[in-house]
Length: 322
Ligand code: XMP
View (cartoon, protein in one colour):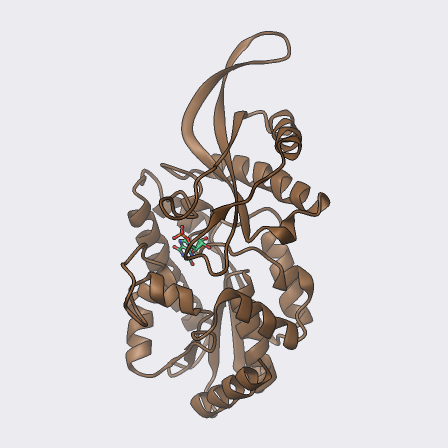
């Protein structure tokens, strides 16, 4: 890993020369490791870290990201709140790939607008936290695997253009997730960043099945926060590769404490083990934990009337539901 770090550092210095480098921060471990790599390789004044809040992030995520980047020694940190733009653009859209495309394109538009506002030079390089699995799953890179989903970070036209012009830096493109974590550790990133489960670029939009609304985002954020906090409290979070909740587009019948009939939404919980996300096994959660977590969720989030646990491996299912 030390060799990988030295190599990556050399590549970054050679490629960047005296140019500015822009990195979009997603909040996940990949872009955090790239941020640390850039800050350790280049003059931090030349490194622009941009975080776009899409409104599709998890509870407290944006504040945690800001805190962690400052800790890394970021000098140019641009935090953009574009929540309303994303939620507006997603109005009435249910198709998963359309959601991904809208989010990916808007990401680039917002990024371009913000770069223009900040006066970051046009020839600035674009750094990305693309890892090996992203390239394979998007049908790029080795190109041996079927195209599964369009991951917006490798499919956008602007990124492709930057790639062709050689204006892109992707220092993690030879690593699997466990390699990224090892590298992060070597760079001195804290366990709370290194141990973070992966989070998809389109965020909660692909975990709210059907149309995305602010209200649904809030419901999912609250429920998912309880789920993830409980996994951490119970010492399960680090045994799981990825855990999250999905808000289903169905309502089911229930009763409240007074015996009144009501309709509540259905929440699915997912937890899987994996090496790289390309295949995954269901995490065999204890029934006791599931029952307790389910009760906590339904008693704290009134909109949710029923909780189910996803018991499907990948294949045949994918990790995300959309
Ligand atoms: P799937 O659902 O394809 O997920 O089995 C494999 C891994 O990729 C993540 N994922 C995404 N990441 N943009 C991303 O950046 C996306 O559109 C996207 N879709 C899935 C997923 O969370 C899992 O870790």
